[in-house]
Length: 118
Image 1 (cartoon, rainbow, N blue to C red):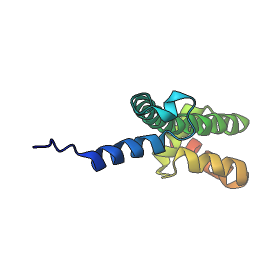
Image 2: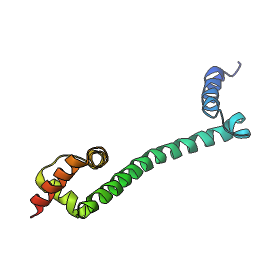
Image 3: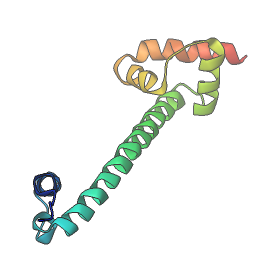
């Protein structure tokens, strides 16, 4: 009796990996074993990169807020504490956008934060 190998599924699995390795260099795109390792590694880096992107943006917003608040004579940490005490429910992204695009409204928020602290 002839041994049945799961040929079509095997080929599909290989093709799926090789398709994802398209654009890689040398054996990484042609040889299944090397391509598979490369694809797994690329996925790991992609996940890590998505997490890193979130951290980088938060740090950018904080830097922007620090610069904007210093112009108004406050410290960043005091500003954030004041905003929370005042019950203003805006996150750092929204606050930094306000600081850039609508400085008058941001100044009012800053005054409310100062009032809440004293």
